[in-house]
Length: 190
Image (cartoon, rainbow, N blue to C red; front, side):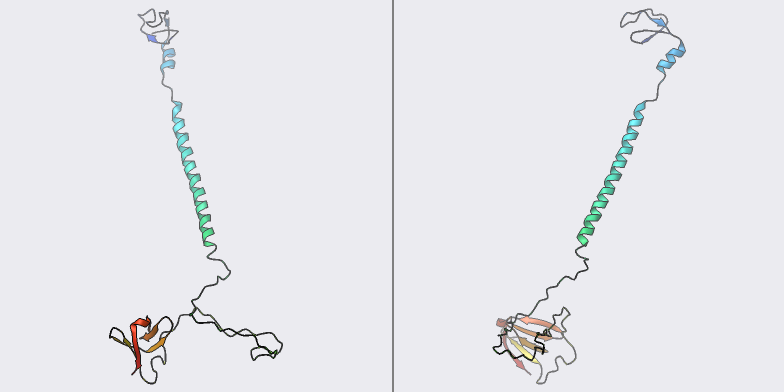
C-alpha cells in the first residue's frame, strides 16, 4: 500500500502520485496502516454519562431542597395553631341590655364589697358548653302544653314557648325553633 504524505489518503501499490495534490506517494507497511486506520474508542461516550450523572444529582439536590422548604412552610403554618397559649374564643351572647351601675353617693360599703374595701369579682361565667334542649322536668309544666296559633291557620303544640326581640322561640321534642313575630297569631295553654 501507498499513502500520500500530505492528505494521508491510501492508494494501491500501482499508483505513483496523489490524485488530489499530485505529490509523490510513499510506501507504508501494514502495521502502520493498521495503526492509522484502527478504530479508536470514541471519548464522546464519557460526555453523555457525565451529563446523565450530573442531571440525576441536580434532580436529587432539587428534591431535597424542595422537601425541606415545603416541610418548613408546613411547620410554620401549623405553629400558630398548636401554640401553648390559650386563644380566646368569642361566644355568642344573647342580645340583652347590659345593666348600668350608678355610683353610690354614700361611701358606705355595698353588700358585694368586702370589709377591706376592694371589690370582689362577680360570680358570672361564660360557657361554651352545649345548651340542653331537653331533660328532666322539661315540658311538664302545670297548666298543660302551650299551643302556638300561626297566622296561616296552623297550630304547633310545643313543650315550651318564650318570646324575644327576634320572635317566638319554641321547644318541641328537644328541638328549638324560632318563628318570626309576623308568623305567630297567638299562644294559648291547654
